[in-house]
Length: 73
Image 1 (cartoon, one colour):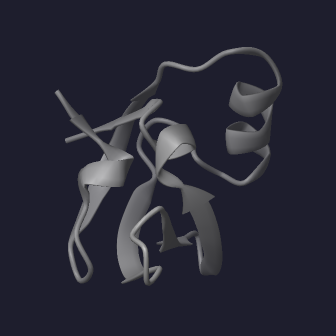
Image 2 (cartoon, rainbow, N blue to C red; image 1 turned 180 degrees about the horizontal axis):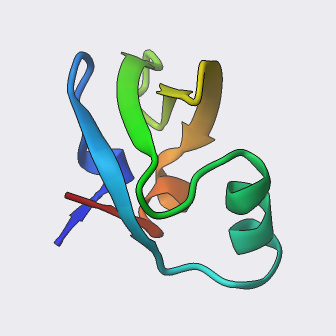
């Protein structure tokens, strides 16, 4: 099982499932992170705890602990 946080800079994938629930799940859906969405990792923070992703023509920064709830393939 591969998660969104495992993507390295320059890699891309497709969202398979969202494991989180409640407010975080709703926030992901509002950002367009739903099954079938293409995502690309653009950058990683200096300490590596936050990455920026290209999602539906928008750049979105997500903490790794939150990105662990998004399954990709």
